[in-house]
Length: 384
Ligand SMILES: *[C@@H]1O[C@H](CO)[C@@H](O)[C@H](O)[C@H]1NC(C)=O
Ligand SMILES: *[C@@H]1O[C@H](CO)[C@@H](O)[C@H](O)[C@H]1NC(C)=O
Ligand SMILES: *[C@@H]1O[C@H](CO)[C@@H](O)[C@H](O)[C@H]1NC(C)=O
Ligand SMILES: *[C@@H]1O[C@H](CO)[C@@H](O)[C@H](O)[C@H]1NC(C)=O
Image (tube, rainbow, N blue to C red; front, side, top):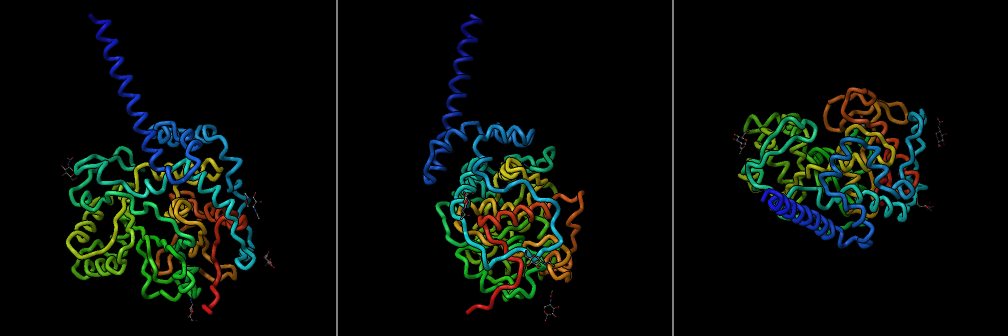
């Protein structure tokens, strides 16, 4: 009987859908179990993940309206008018930490992503050969190689980790001659970006590294695509110096990096390198963007620095930012290098670039003034 058959199919589909929803909820519940106030998050997270992602991509305003309550509790106000000429107005001596605000930001971020989960895809959820669409180049795909699979963690490398004082070290030349090294190293958890060198600059940038990011392009730019034995050795030595840190590789953001990731991964597997690799979840970027868009910060593509800040709100109580300075000159008008360690230049105000650094900086500066984070842009006091 066709009608009965249809009813049967309908029944099966309904059960399947219910099962998927329940699975999704229990996953979310498990992840937020240690945050407390789970009822509230439960409601916010009820929308299946795939829909949340689609919403973020399609229409940022719809996210805003579906996330009631975020605007009242949410800190970053609309960006102020263009950066004032006077850049000296960032005070660290009168700064006080606002824990209430910092806690509010953490809660608000958690409505969009769970950094503990989104920091890495896990072995259990993928298998070698699984096809992945790049975040920025949706039409292009790659697959999870056997080697990459072997390096996937089985549980989040940040599981149940909480720190009182964290530093996120950007790579701006503003760090040169800052003497901030010892101050940075005094934090409980130090995040660095793009495998930036530390040894030769330790007085200004410190050495301590608990998490470091590595875009696939770094393999080319800083290690000459590992073409010669010498560059491969340098790369390995750099990784060995990380001793136990999380190595965060955004492998699936933009196409073109897959070979570099594969070379790097192969070297890690064939040498004694003590790093905990992490490959960000496929939803991380859009979720972070959604969080900032909802707070009226219209970033195109978050920089690694802003990604790290957003994720760090989950693990850190007090967050200090160093080496964030998207300007060609310092407060006294002296030239500032884009990176403290190379000669790359960058057009900060270009509208064709992927990032909106001056806007990000204004946002961070506002958060600094509100006491949610501390931005260090000057020289550090010598250690006492
Ligand atoms: C810049 O702002 C600071 C603090 O608001 C002020 O003390 C200083 O005089 C200003 N400098 C200039 C050049 O306007
Ligand atoms: C801290 O932030 C909260 C939330 O934005 C605000 O209500 C409070 O006034 C702030 N406290 C101080 C001391 O600035
Ligand atoms: C995965 O990618 C590699 C290299 O791009 C290709 O040779 C291989 O056939 C792909 N495997 C699957 C299962 O798609
Ligand atoms: C750092 O200080 C050294 C020595 O005083 C000086 O030669 C150099 O130009 C300074 N670098 C920057 C970027 O200010």
